[in-house]
Length: 199
Image 1: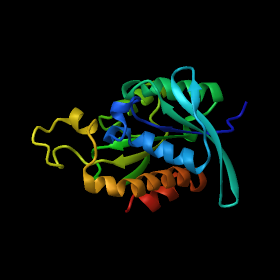
Image 2: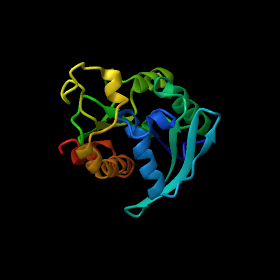
Image 3: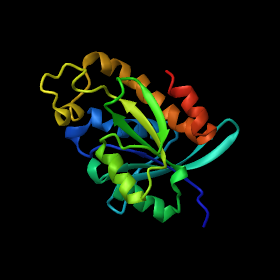
């Protein structure tokens, strides 16, 4: 069976204690896409919340699956790989959305391949898919050392919440992340990079 779907996976950690934290940027963007395209989530093999939708843009119609892994961040690859195998989705039709400390808050960078940049969710996906060659929407959160955390505690930083000013900007930033995922699907990665990476 040929791949009919795109797979968009927004990374995060399940549970109330993680809601709204920097590490859950992927979940936030996935929720935005679900609202835009009327996607309803249900459980997939206990590994992921998964929903199906159709995007109608630019006179084209594309089917997609939207995933929020339930495996916790460090094992995100188990969910992504299981869905990809079940629906026969190749890496060139996979988009992963995740937080990135190497980018200032509000910056978005799109890429395919390359280093995981220390992100455990991406390391897990690379390992399970046996390739890093899938599209990534990197959502900048800033780094603890740049954001005034004297202890430079990375774990506390990524599992912490945005400051008041950032929270005001968050809805627009999340919407931009959703736009970026759509652009990859409809315009291709190179054109989408031209649009978002230079902001």
